[in-house]
Length: 242
Image 1 (cartoon, rainbow, N blue to C red):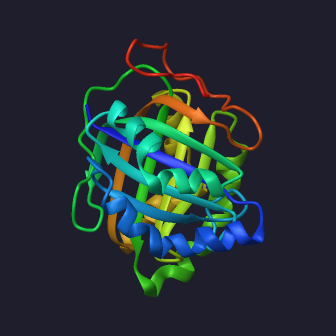
Image 2: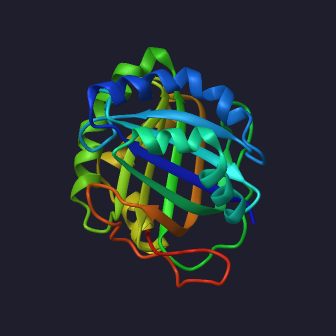
């Protein structure tokens, strides 16, 4: 089954932040040369709840696809580009995900290959290319949406990342199960009203929606091991955060 990984890196010092910012350009050649890597995206992140246009200069992300989880693990341990990120970061966490569903496109392609849902927490990823003429209207709604997501007790993890500030945005969240995620999406609040506006007013030039099973977590975030619990350990991969 196809593996998708989301690696998050925190850089505390000014020199390390400058290094990470420079890697948005310089790391591209290294990632393109990694054996068996599929799609890969270098992303920055937002401040606050993460879903904001103000960049967080301390957090960067690498999203990638692989033939399977074991191939991804070998690359993280062996490829120089990933070792350099770990060496410069003061904290790192990688989420190992299996795609369950996907619709839409990313840069004209569908990078995820869905398989049957597994057991464990559910991750939701949305990616959108925002039309420049409605960017101000879109970001005007974001604070209310971020507040609702931040207060929802079912959200296990959340972050907003993006390739291009203001225009190419990705939201990523983890939920204990599909029911809790669906309940949030159905609730008639800021999020639901924004979704209706997307449809009726045509906010996005391109969009993609994908769901994943969270299979494994390596590393820590916020000074602690992740508090979400993937499915029980299997013989061919580590499941608990390490």
